[in-house]
Image (cartoon, rainbow, N blue to C red):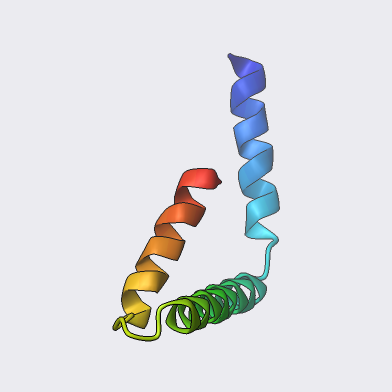
Length: 71
């Protein structure tokens, strides 16, 4: 049990050394990536089914759900 507590303490010591601005940058880039990929999928569907209305936010939601399930 002591090893676990020591490991947790070391983890939080290392976490406190992280510059959270870089984490914010990484999260922002990840968001932009998901937006771009979902937009590309929407364009694929619009080209495949030109007579249908395809809303981008539905595609984005489906993409996020798919990424969440596979990760």
